[in-house]
Length: 319
Ligand code: UDP
Ligand code: MG
Image (cartoon, rainbow, N blue to C red):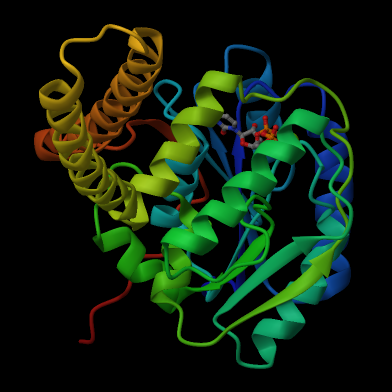
């Protein structure tokens, strides 16, 4: 058995309710495509029936299915990295398990990669998510455009195609906190984008709480730019200069008019505003520091409990 042409990598976390529909649609698409493929499911520490269902699927389609079961929940991006570490195809396609990314779009990505693109990004024609998620996503997209060199129209859609050569440096970079679509973009030589459909979740609920989303967005901001830190240095300089003028002005008034207490609440307002900014700046610094702290410990990004795959033929050494 030689290496397949296409690897599809899918992180799966407590998705028992969508899996049968996913299997049905995904394998049909891949069979119709008529290319050799493998589908790698990464179970990200699910506590429902997901691992059992994946195991069943492996038994049914062992030649084209591989299942990686992680020890516990490491997060969507770490799970995808685990999948990347095991895939053998030249074209690597990532996809969400919840069918928000229609598998029927995979052939369009493959055709673009056939045309020589090593990174095929996607833009959701009409995003089907809660309003607050859409607003947060749009804000984050705009912020990322401003503070990083990453030029992708729609960073949130995980349905993407990467060439093996783009994934290789990503695997060796050992970054603990990653935002895969952005990181891969940095390593791509020839990228393009296509418009894809986006559907509502087929079943189950989003695995991202507000807190998890904030964490992810901070990963994106801190992982690709130090502009937020610079923003606070520049604000600091501006405030220091303004207060110098203010001190001169108050000293002059003190000398000319004498002591006065009016305007004390205006001063409070200014002081609270500045305290707010400095707390925010400290928090921002903490975000960077915390990530450095975790990165220096060099703990593994994920731990594998079990891999279900057909044994690979070992290369026979030449006689
Ligand atoms: N996911 C994961 N680990 C997590 C959270 C999510 O593997 O800790 C998977 C999830 O099963 C799905 C994909 O990542 O396949 C996207 O998650 P979800 O649909 O909940 O995110 P949303 O679409 O709300 O951004
Ligand atoms: Mg989803």
